[in-house]
Image (cartoon, rainbow, N blue to C red; front, side):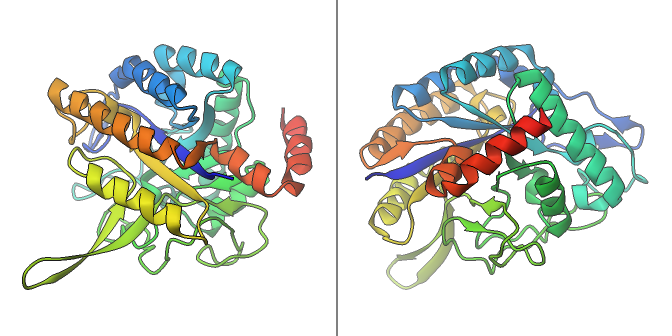
Length: 325
């Protein structure tokens, strides 16, 4: 049996790397990238892959994306999950302005407001796309025990917010700094502990982290240790193919998880792929990568990955979703 390939797309407004929070309030967030996702969807379908569009609030109102996603959902060729940037997700509450801060982490709000935001976006996505929302990635990779508690209450099955070997502790929000996952090794999926998200437990929600590996390279005099993602940057096709081969040969790992942002598929709406030529090169790399992955991996949505592997959750999920809707 082939291993599984999961594609996750942080589906969000244009260039959210640039700070949108000012002393006068939020800058307007555009969604031009929503017009250019059809090519990516077609590429995924060419190889029978199932992109998981982890969707932010503003993209739930972007008509081109909504129409594309609804059509793909009807065909069973996509999954919609939740991806919340708390600073731009209703109910909106502005924290005291910090000129040295950037986009507010969800954990900087009160627990009551965190819950209201997560509940609102979950229900909104269910209303827009007419499906149950069971997969989640937190904005700016923030994940903690209270977020987990909210996910469980809302009936989620899977999270993919944690980044093995990677720390975000140098990335400021409004005033807090990001989470540190640098001591978490990439070990595949596991059920989270309600008391400590860095440990396995019996919370009922699985962590399925993106594929991030340690790589050792050598030159004439030095040994270099680096952290490599299954995530395109325009210059890392060889690294991504190396990751694919490493996971293929590892008997303890049975999935690859790829990630990128929807805005990285449109020229000028992200800091990495700035022009038409860069986007064309990205698609060439993706064509090669996807073709190679398809030889050894089958595409699957992230919720289906869990419910297929752990069949006892299928009945619970169906019952829970019926109650929610």
